[in-house]
Length: 567
Ligand code: ATP
Ligand code: MG
Image 1 (cartoon, helix red, strand yellow):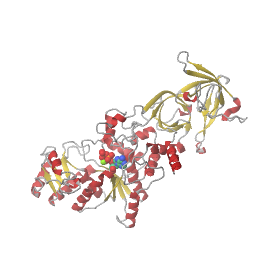
Image 2 (cartoon, helix red, strand yellow):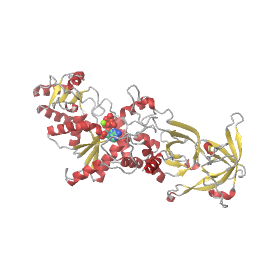
Image 3 (tube, helix red, strand yellow):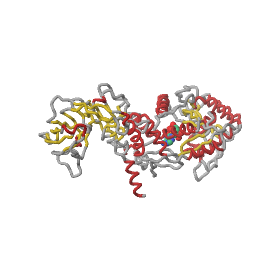
Image 4 (cartoon, protein in one colour):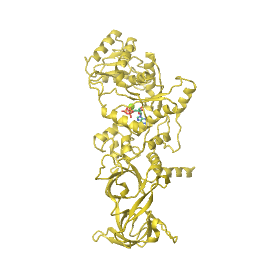
């Protein structure tokens, strides 16, 4: 398991393209594509592929297509097509007029496969699926030829035509390439090119009952679109000889397939099958649940497109599988939001504080910085009054040694306001719980500075009780407790490692009044607490709901520091 560090990493495909441009391999063209199958929502792994394909095209003045690889009607849906389009756009990429569907090539692909049959390079096999598997052999044992392998071209054309016409049931026959049953590469042992599937397709309806397989469709779609570099993930390395075989046999334009290592992230899963399972069985509230590694989940959680793009650049592109720490993704969003998110004050678990010497009914509007990192973002007014809320965890009645925040008899600073001193603690008669504090303030410390140079050890955030808005805040933690939940034993299930505390909902939070008209999706830093985003699905004019995007605790920075120390 290797964890990538935070400096921009190498990208070997960038080098290949630079070399191809030097040798004028494709007449100076760079044309890539992003080829999703519309059978689920896009996730952060897809973002890596999107950034790579669109990025390489853009930096070489090339083009990048979006092509839906929609050859398996049983799981594909228009809802997925729409979500994928909106996610790619949100990430900041534009396919212009180059949105394609493999299903638009069905007729053309059919003509191509007829050519293969006519050339004696494909045949209709009537073995059952089980028999085909059995005949295929194993890694150490060569395969056996099907008794139907040497059917005449006429018989093959006739049978294949009847397959298309719907004369046979699913599984009765398949069309196979005639390559080599003794090939050491199992995928080259007469792979299936077409199968019967009597399932309506979300775009072509009932027009077809035979559908081309991925390996046949993908290379030809790339060829039809004039793709130069067909970038895919490592698990397709063994498919490359077949990619090449089909294009060579048909003597058509031949793009180059290049494989790279897919993205794996700690504490989550990036397999569509597993994500579908989480959605369909209600382990999460949907594809856009803010705990999901999907683009729509990350967006709802408060991630910016820039942070995701920076992350993808940082992890680099390699040939070797690795697992990237979630902390690096969190670092990327923190780094981006630090620059752009306005600061506000919000209290998650409020504790009432009464300033006994502050005049009843008086309200002061105190000036607060919107972003100390960027003075250009200006200031705002925050109301201060006699009754405030501070964070429960910022007070301890019997403080341990290293606790520097508020305690009986101790003085602290309220951010942008005054020094206050705790004079009296009110406890619940039955439970002993702290319910209220009585404090005094020093009017000389307005703005948070003491003219006599007196020091305090803590600065707390706060809101004015009478002015604050009620809000619900949702805190998130990793979806899984296990760093690599996909790595489980056979008798185990990845779902056994779900984190039961991945969502904590706080319903009595108070936030400063400047957030009154905060738009859904807008992002803020709640001072000392993290970055938060206005919930876009469940927020309304009546109910203000925030999602915590990420805390301020930068584990990645810590990792880098320890690494530096070791070196
Ligand atoms: P499926 O198992 O359904 O094929 P998939 O995740 O491969 O799932 P596709 O829709 O086929 O989904 O993927 C579209 C593109 O995104 C492909 O080129 C694929 O290689 C790439 N991709 C998918 N997952 C990752 C990942 N984790 N990292 C990088 N690229 C990925
Ligand atoms: Mg795939």
